[in-house]
Image (tube, rainbow, N blue to C red; front, side):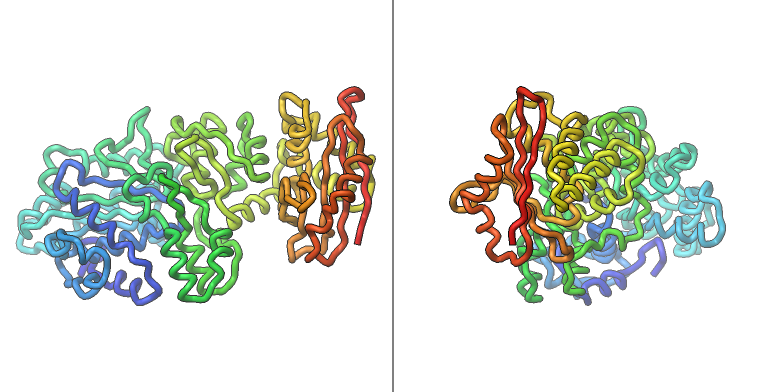
Length: 527
C-alpha cells in the first residue's frame, strides 16, 4: 500500500473499532455520480465535524488494493444495489493537505513549494508502482499511465483541501499555484474524463472565488450553509445522539442543550460530532472547542473594524438572531468587504449557525456561547468593550442596591447604538435591558417573560451553580414609577417561582418616564 496512492483501509479499520456512528450511506450518493458529469464534489464543514473520518471511509471503500467487504458488510451502504459494483474497484489518490503542511514546516521547508511537493509525491508513487514504464515528471502523464496500465480510473480524495488557503491567506501566488494544480486535474478536457472516476474534496471553506466565480467551477459544492442531500452526513443527527445517550446512560436533553443547534434544511438538527463524543467519553458537559488545533481565532475576527460588527456580536451574545448577507463572501479568511463577510466566515467555522429560510444567523448552543463569553472577558478597545464596561458597572450597582446608579447605567446604554430607533414602549425598554445586563451571560441563566402563576415576570436572572451571585427579578414599567414595578413583583408573588432556589433574591423595579426622559429604579432584597 502507498501513502498517497491506494493507501488501504487500515485507518478506517481503526475508526470502526471505537464507538462508531454509521455514516456509510453517504457512499451511495457518490456512487450515483461515479464517472458522470456530476462526479466532482466539494463538501465543506466546520472543524471537528467528521471530515477526516468520512475521507478515510471513502478511501477504504474504493481502494482496489485491499478487501474491505468485512468492514462494510454490516453498515448501511451494504444494503445499496451499488455496493458490490464499486467496492474496491478503483485507484485511490488520498491527499491530506494539512499533513503536507505539517511535514514541510517540520522539515524547515518553505510552503512556497508545497504544490510541487504534492505533485512530486503523487508522481513518485505512480512511478514506483509502474517500474516497467519510463519514469515521468509530468503529473498528467503519470495519471494517464496509472489508468492505462491498471485499467482502473482514479477516485481522488482530498482532505482539508483549503488548508493552504487558510495557512497562506495573504500569499496569492501560493494560492494560485495550488488552485492551478487542481484545475489541471479536474478542469482539463484532455485529462479529467480519462482519469477521474470521482473526486471528493472536504474542508472548512467553500472553493475560493476567482472574481465572482468559483476557482474550480466544475465542482458541485455542499456547504454548511447549504448541505443539500448531504445534510444528515454533515454531523450527528437527533436520532443518532439519542441512541448514543441511551447506550451510555447520558442525559440526552442536557447534551442537546450543549452541542445541538446547527439547523440545516427541513429543520434537521445537527450536532458537532467531536464535542458529542468527547462529552460522552468524559461524562462532562463543557466546551471542547478550544481543545482543537484549528488556527482560526474568534477574537481576531470579531474585533475587525467593520461598521455594525460589534453591534451584531452583542446581539448574538444576548441570544438574538441577526440577518446576514452571505452572497459577497470570497470563501477565504483574508478578503472581507463588510461585517457580513466576517459573520459568514464565522458560520463556516461553526461559531454561528445559518438559517437559509430567513437568512439569519445565531449562536447554536451552550458550547459556542461559552466561546463568545470568553470573548467578552478579553474584548479589545471597541464598541462591544464599552458596552461590557458599562454592563459591569450596572451589575455591580444592582447587587449593591445602588438604585440611582442602576438608572444612570441604563440611561447610558439607552443613549448608545444598542437602543431601538423608536424608544416608545415597555418592549423597547426590555430591549435596552437585554444589552445593559449583557455581562450576566457568564454568571446567570436569563429567562424573559417567565410565567409565575399570577402573572409574567419580565426578566429573571438565575445564578449558575458555579457562581455565588444572588438571583434577580427585574420588572419594567413605562410611564408609571419604579415603586409600581416593585409592588407588582410582590403582589403577584414573583419570587414564588424561585421556591426551589435557596439563596438571596434581588428585586429590581425600573421605570421610564417619557415626559422627563429619565429612567428611575428601586431595589429590594429578599431571602
